[in-house]
Length: 315
Image 1 (tube, one colour):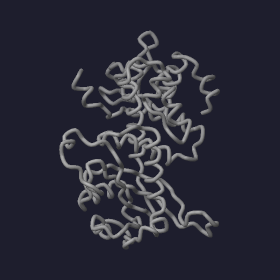
Image 2 (cartoon, rainbow, N blue to C red):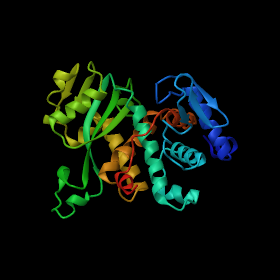
Image 3 (cartoon, rainbow, N blue to C red):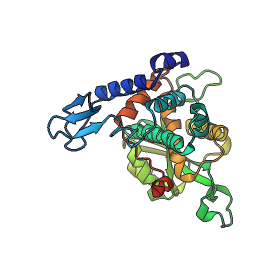
Image 4 (tube, rainbow, N blue to C red):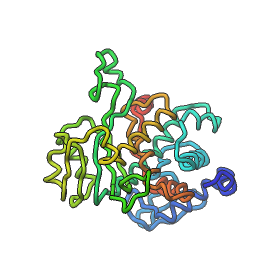
């Protein structure tokens, strides 16, 4: 959505609240007490009431705004800025733009939105021809390991391991300069280690069993021939990585560049939320101005699981 359109349709708190209610009504409200979809809106109470058990549900309850006291307009501005460009916006910059005194609520709001982006993408599995590899993302050293001697390479405490998967099909008569393969959807999953059992568990959850998987010759992938329809594995020279696994490594490079440009540092425990946003927007790269409305839809449909541990302890 363009900036002028956003200002036209969502000029104040009342307009944002009304639009959010309309989206909830369209998607359907479920009673959290009995599970019924038969509810009525009580205008005087500004709540939904179940016709069966008479349990009442607030407009925010069961959505990404569950438990939040931030204005609806804050959430709509955040969703607009997250979807208006291919890049992103930091919580510190959003706080400055909003003129809000405290950083923590704005930071949590952004991560809650990224969390429901991930929830939405979790509904879909990848299929067909698949590229799969692991990426290593620079993150802050955990406090518990800061006194340890830092390792180098893939095992470094400053690197978080990410399983990266992309739907990738051969291009017919690619033009000069084009990639040999076309990309569909992607997934990026933070993993604690690269053991075979870990990689197998994540892969079977997100890839259809009749898919054809292309990987390097890592031992972590040895079971794929038993789990999927076909497994193509070979030792890949670094100079040929762009031919064998082009889109996996384009996704890794683009995500790393984005994070380096936008954020001073990312803690390992929050890396998945940033990857959620990157994948969500990549997978909907052709949605154009509809991307904002889609994010409002999932914001009204999904309750976030995100809760900052330090903040929760302080309450």
